[in-house]
Structures are given as structure tokens and as C-alpha cells.
Length: 345
Image (tube, rainbow, N blue to C red):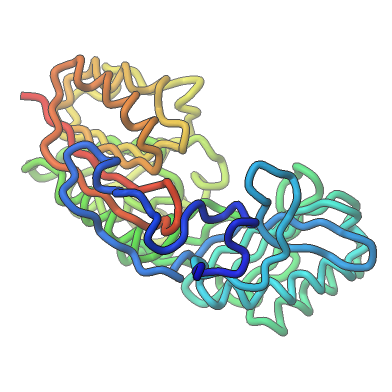
């Protein structure tokens, strides 16, 4: 019996119980796996399609543009699954939602943060309906965007914050967060454990820093110099630094590391480089990391293939793996999170 009635149709899961691959074997040097409980995923990106008088909200079928109307999910937090029905209803009544759209939901400290993206023009009544939806279902913030446009917050009922290593961050609507709180904690712990012995005020360079998931943990060990390409993520990161008076130990800079990677001399003197690149990896950046004089590199990845390719640059430069942690926060899938620590003598 499958873990979900949608299994085999919905593209969200590739395996059912008993069929999941050995994820420790997917991460070079890993011994065992940190298992994150099922039903803890706090983020979802639903597709939405209008079909006559009804609206379908869910994930795409495997290798298809068809959307499976989500009625249950073993992977998501139950609070997220419960939002599918009211999201379906508010979209059905929106004039600005013509045929296709999407809904990104992040569960933050106090509740859900919802971003609705539609293919038409959002009307004043649409905004009123979204605010009513937020009030009825305890949504912290509801935002809307037209096409590929920037999100607009139409209702903020409570502060939309998420706490990272004791620091409150207000992420932008639809911001990237680690899949689960438990997975995030395991990643941060593995990164911190991989840091070398450092003198006070040692410099740590962090690449692809996002809203500060790892950054705010690193501040206890050195001066953090973070880089991130996404403007909204940098704004959230920077605002949290100011709000918590951390400017003396942290700074974040907006920089597209694919088009303008950090150069080897810019990393000179760093005690460690920490990077958590997007799914495709950090091919444009890695040759410079490998060419730098940094002796410790900590690489966080959710894509074993990209990790293997990027690690090649480090191996050729004389780096060796000193530790590796596999973290399974993607149950029933081929994906695994990895934190791999590389060192050069």
C-alpha cells in the first residue's frame, strides 16, 4: 500500500515505502543518514489551473504539464495541506486568475506566508478576497503578483518572520527556505562542526547566502562576509543584520555569482569558505574557490550530481574530504541534502 493516494500520478514522490535508494551512498564519505521525519516539509509551490467552474491546485504529474489536485500529502506539514482547499476557493473567485497561476506557501514562526501569482490583472475585489482569506485561515501575510511581476503584499496580519539561529528574519514573499526546520538545523550543525579552529575575528566567506540560513549561525565563530544574488533575499538578510545590531560582525553583498563570481584574491585571508549553491551547482564559482589560498571549504548541496562536478575542482587543487553528512529531508525522492567538508594541507 502506498503512503499517499496520489502516488504514481503526482510527480512529487518518486518512491513509496521500501523503495527509497540508499542516500548515504549518494554522498561521498558519508556514514549513515540524518533522517528528517516525514510530514515536516514547510514549503510548497503549487501550480493552479482553472478548469471550467473549478480550480485545480497541486503538483504536476511526472513529466507532464497536468496538475494533480492535492487532497492529501504525506510529505508536507498538515497545516500546509489544510490550506489547499481554501486556496482553491479564493482562486476560483478571483477575477485576475484567468487560467494558470501558482501559489507559494512558506510556514514561518507564527503561521503561513502566501504568495499568489496570477495570469491576469488583480482587481480591488481580488485584494479584498485575499485579505479575507488570510484573516479566516490565520495567514500572516498574503501577497499577489501578476505574471512575472514583483510581489505586492495586500495583507499583513502579523509579522511574517522566521527565526534563524536566534535571529528573526522577515523573508520576502515566496522566499527560498530550507525544506524543513529540522533539516535546516541539521545543515547548520554540520556546517558549524566543519569549521576549522579559528582565531577571534577570523574571516568567513559565505557564498549563495540567501536570507541568512547559515550566516546567522556563523557569526558566533568569525566575521561573516556573505554574498547573494537575489535582491529580495539580500534585503531581508541586511534588514535582520541592522535590526539585531550585527553590522560589526556581519555584512551581506548583492552579487550574481554566476555572472560575476568572487575572485580568488577576494577570498584571501579567509579561514573558511561556506557555500550553499542552487540545485545546478556553482560551476562558475568553483574554479576560483579552488584557486584561492583558503584551506577549508564547506559545501552544502541538494544535488549529488552537481556536488560531484564541483568537488572535482577542489580535488584537482589538492583538497580532500574530511567529513560528510547526508541529510534526508526529501523523503520518497532521489534527492538528498549533503554537507561536505573539504580541507587542503
